[in-house]
Image 1 (cartoon, rainbow, N blue to C red):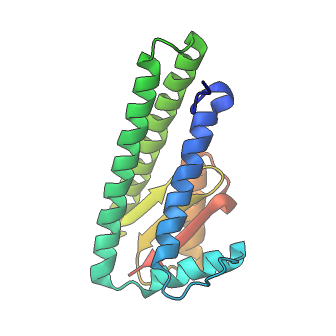
Image 2: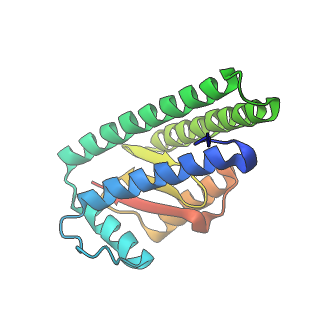
Length: 177
């Protein structure tokens, strides 16, 4: 019988990352009021549509957005944690596979901690609300603000790049007010 999940070459991490990115994009695309039926968006059109959708959310809905996003992120973190713990407890798996699950769990804790710390730091810098999603190859920062100046956005990109050790070009920044 073929196993659905294997830990060789970090495939579980890759599959879960792809799943999370797909869920985020599905949520954001679902919020786009007039999307094309043929789903033939280019990357630039998709980012522009997401940006426009986020800009169209009013203050009351944005509070719900931030709360909903955090709730969904917590559920996904919990599911990943349960999966990795179950893999480590599975007696039919090799020590190498269990070690891979342990590394993936430690990576999950590390990324979750970074997301939480970045959000806390930015709230401490007087941003009303913040969502930071640390993923590879593309991370996401959503700020509750009417807009950001180019210098503010550059400052945020530079801070996150240094703090998280990522390329600032791999960070998408959006505002919601």
